[in-house]
Length: 351
Image (cartoon, rainbow, N blue to C red; front, side):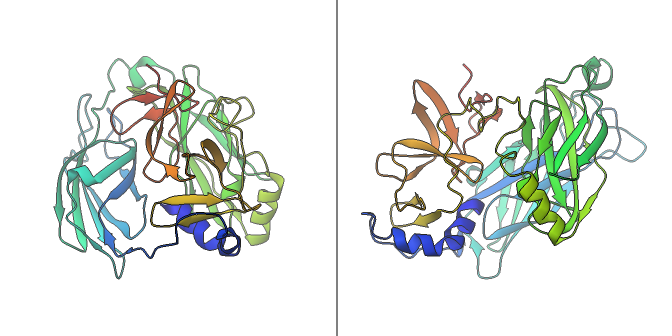
């Protein structure tokens, strides 16, 4: 629960004031046992090309991805073929003081490019996870005959907006931000040829993004990488200031879940605090209130809170539409849920 842990400690002063709210007493919680693993997968493998790699990031606390091995990678002289299913061996290690507790296939949740967990081997402090990715589709010409080649990647150095030249057949794009060689965001889906990353410029470093065009789930272009935007700490602060308000939206004309098409009224209470008690997670606003029976936008993610004010996960029926929130609470949009249903730009299930 990466956002909430950060919010919990960053907002201790606010959280202390919120203890007057009639919630159950705060309970101690055991955080040294890991019973679920969340992995975010980005595949850079294309049919018709040799090599390629897969980026797998830990999407939870208490563990890291130590190694990703493609177990059926063809030799350098051969290319991946249409219909191939890349297979991975992912080594996950626990942090000091943590250990895994009987991790099985059902305890591993995949996001991003996803895949299927075929087997798991748990050794207390090390877990080996074997994953099969989706079948590659590369016949009928490059990217199935669609124009999905992205060119002219660049940066607006003033406000941290990434941009690129739009190929003819792109219906949407997938984009991810990196700093000093490490990914610092999940894969985001956007519908325009730009995305503002100003909120992510939290310190100095070498920033770059990777983006690919998507026609449909079976036809995706190659990941293309931008030039590096190198900034120091003062320049990063300036980018955040110049981009204030822009990064809450995918782009100015995007129909994403953070724009007017979202499930609720945006209340970006970034100075509030996440708190955990014996029942679950709840959010304390700066004015000592807490959301009840509503959606709330917190640090650019939508969360739903029930009639008691606790964060809800899984499927949620709201205004006769179904939405899905991850175990970490964030609502999914423009992707397939873990149980195989597609949710659209506003997060609602497309039947």
